[in-house]
Image (tube, rainbow, N blue to C red):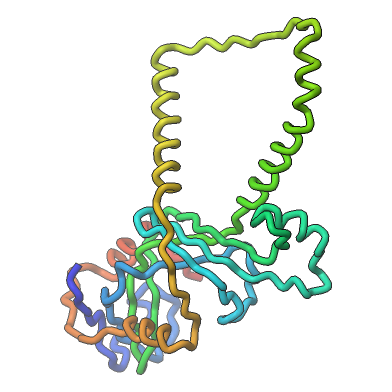
Length: 265
């Protein structure tokens, strides 16, 4: 998409009543110009943290490591845990640390992994500058949720240790009389078998390709940093070309958020 900025309205004294816009008959005190820009639209993602404190302030996330698989768009962040907190169970932390390494490390990080969220509507990021609203379309919505891969590693190591301990018992059991076992047989049609095989192959193939893609280091800059301020400045339109509107306000809103009835009291 071309790097264009569009002026969607002129800042001026209101010329129409609220009733003409289908709103309650109250006085309109100002009309705000809106600018639509695509300067960073293709790289603008919305990251959500559904399991973190909703009152968390900017700067509290501060990941120690961030990484990205650019082809599949997967993101991971390692967040340091406060192991000195009286609420941290160090004994349990040592048990779970086996899932991180074999050198006695305690569980001192929480890894957040991205999950893509299908867009049910069109979202935009807004920046209000000098009495004008600047809008940039959001390309992708991603939720970052805790990864529990370390639990899988702990389970694998416990299973391997248990299997080693039971090897002798298994040898003895194999010499005993073989008992009758019940076998359940499931009959599927050829079409169902083929569909299941294709589905399994497709899922395993996609998972394999995801695992094979190497991680790339991702730099993280929080609010207030020079890098963050530079990117934020690109949310503001550079040009203010007038937009010739060929749709009504209702048609324009329907195109953005879908066909819904306004909740007007």
